[in-house]
Length: 190
Image: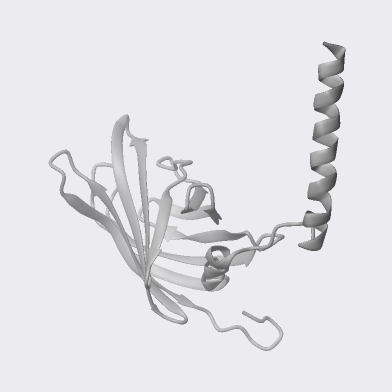
């Protein structure tokens, strides 16, 4: 019994010693792939504006926001901090965008300061200039399927739409708008 355990341990040590030179030859640490690099589009400061349509979850009205997005250490994720004004008052949000090679999907984790705030992790895909995130979560006790679509309209601009699926299967737009990258002065970069 003890002999088998020693043999397994020796095999594990041998396997690790063979793997170590390969890892060292590749730099020893993972590097962001092309999917991660696509997230770089969102790095910078963005000004957004749009409209929320009246719905069972929140009142309608206009909104505006400023988003400051930067690479997280290692460049595997982008972290955004938003502040603004919406139909329910002042807004604050923290969002993290990343890519999961395991799930072959973009992930978004966001939290907000309003009573409807949900901590969900929608999964997304990118096709051409369109980023589509889908999610299932509970709002006011109801299971809701939602979709958030970002359409890149230029190097420094995109439009967005948030919709939910009704019981009959049709999609209803809850909010829509546009964002434009703020040009920074020479000292600020972007």
